[in-house]
Image (cartoon, rainbow, N blue to C red; front, side, top):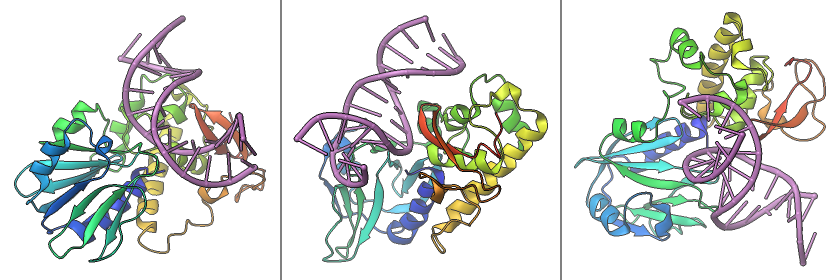
Length: 263
DNA sequence: AATATTGTTCAGCA
DNA sequence: GTGCTGAACAATAT
């Protein structure tokens, strides 16, 4: 579930609870959560250091340490961050716990163990190592650049939007949402999209991701014209009343409106 | 009680 | 390289 807007809200949560806090202890409950670094080495690098700032690229959250180096969180499908006050019990499925001086802590919890925590020297090194495309919300990503990135792609628009090597941050749920609001069928091939559609796709992508990132902080609810809460059987399109349709596109379970999103 | 479902990444194949 | 399929992870819904 954690896609760009969810990770962005984790980032804000991280800022609130972990920034400027010294990590006095690292409890690695499940060593398998670490990617490309041993438990001993991770503990050695993090313990005694303070998180000075945070960042995000696509679905990856960065915690910058004051003495150099960056902790990178990826949340897989079920990962999350949860803060506990002193004496508070860390949540179920906690895989790694960062303990602060007052005995309070930040837990990385992940029932299905699909997420990973990495260590890197610089974000550039990490991003190029993973071969990630530009972040979907990076201010530098403008319509011309967006068009350039997509040009040459032959696949269905849903697959391409979800491809982290093309643009980073969009997963199954938000690709459906963006295509629904941009009135584009998920199986439409990139070369079939004219300039007008591409522009609309770009504007809608930014709008949906920005709105959804902010939503977590406020009501938590999606606006009434959103598809996301309607991803279940027998729901009707809020704009045309057609029954929403389910199918497998881009290898994922997908929802769309056959009335608004023509093939 | 077995099975489908769920999201992401990566391996394997044409 | 590209696009597609399926495996792996673990719990929960059916």
